[in-house]
Amino acid sequence: MDLQRLATASRLANIDAFHVMELAKQAAELERAGRHIIHMGIGEPDFTAAEPVVRAAEAAMRRGVTQYTSALGIAPLREAIAGYYKTMYGIDIPARRVVVTAGASAALLLACAVLVEIGAEVLMPDPSYPCNRHFVAAFDGRAKMIPSGPAQRFQLTAQQVETHWGEQTRGVLLASPSNPTGTSILPDELARILKAVRTRQGFAIVDEIYQGLSYDAPPVSALSLDDDVITVNSFSKYFNMTGWRLGWLVVPDELVGAFEKVAQNLFICASAVAQHAALACFSPEALAIYDARKAEFHRRRDAIVPALESLGLRVPVKPDGAFYVYADCRGVNHPSAGDADALTQAMLHDAGVVLVPGQDFGPYTASDYIRISYATSMENIEEAMARLGKFFA
Image 1 (cartoon, rainbow, N blue to C red):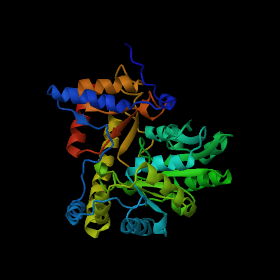
Image 2 (cartoon, rainbow, N blue to C red):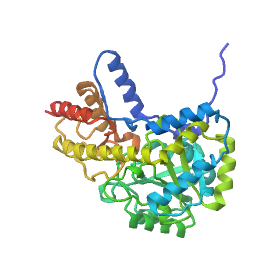
Image 3 (cartoon, helix red, strand yellow):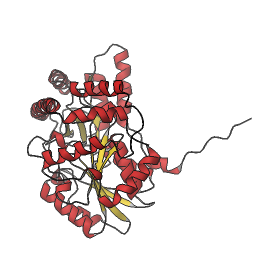
Image 4 (cartoon, one colour):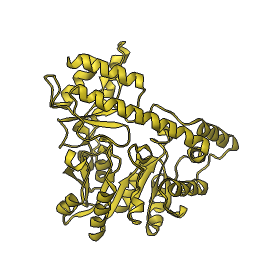
């Protein structure tokens, strides 16, 4: 007897698979066959949690603080995050507005659950981190991807927001610095974007998870430009705690109750152990470690950009943050120039280097660009550039 197949929700048609994960699977197969593969695809720091954080986690577990916490997070951590905004950005954020989440992904899911109506349109640049449009789709909204090239620093501009805001548009979702490009929205432009959104009574969600890794100028939080903006941050990137799954939001006072209600139902709370451990992130000892690691990322950025240019991988906008370079592959000496998917496949199989084609990040730059992550050692970066030099020769 034939069994009736279970039907999946129609919204899944609007959620794409990660192409980078397919490359990762192929790389794993090559490694099992004995090949040495250099991974410059996944956006994960090669540094792990700082020792003070590890000690704090161990102490928390020994004290038995492993039960559920408030859905908004433990009070000491919310206060520590609020203090971080004062130290980092010079702005006063009341701790009551901080919502601790199970990573930045949970933060973005909560924001979309609270703000995205069925059929609502959310503007974001193309290229963007792919999950951003999928978070919107998960709540039956629609991401409107706006082509944003080197002239716009691969970011939205206020003019684009004004031009593309339509009847169904409800807000914008931005990231500064951005994945995949490592570029920031300049403060004056960001202020104009937020003004354009406020004028239209829309919402603005700004992903700031890479702001701690800003190299060329002090970072400017969107909260210093507009108190009603919703910002997302994380302990994953600057604080090197990817697998701990801990992040946070800062939301307007009037929305705290809404975020709490949704968080209670969707997540209950973030990991109690991770929250208690994260308190140590703000200690002088830990902050000194993070500053040293940031300097190392900066050094890698300054090494890899000219190396890529020398290979014919043009970098039209120098990344000023995060640990990514978005490189134009149309000018390289290879039959697959201008076909990022085929080129990254060839780089993997012929040179043993994993890079990410632009197709994950939106159709506008899909074929012309590849993303390179320099969240790996200088030794690996130098070896990868040497391999790619032979590959293109």
